[in-house]
Image (cartoon, rainbow, N blue to C red; front, side, top):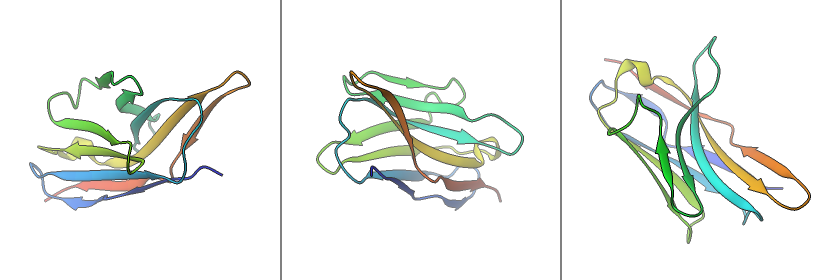
Length: 119
């Protein structure tokens, strides 16, 4: 059973940095991309940043230039380095892995980690 475990969330002051990690329990066959999403109460989950296995990276416009997604394949871990945080970045952040095989397409999700940006 593949598990994605996020860590690194917490309370940070506006303008400060925070780095999230997502540890994947085992190799995911058919992995195509990994991503970070975030969600606030009453809103849909939104894509923050995505990195494909080919190295293509995409960011939401709201975080472009402030956030950096990266992946350490040796450690099977995904990261999200967040800089210049503002209160609008407050959300639950979720790690996602998308896998496509001949038989299926599957999304794996972590349990989420809370990020609060406040003074």
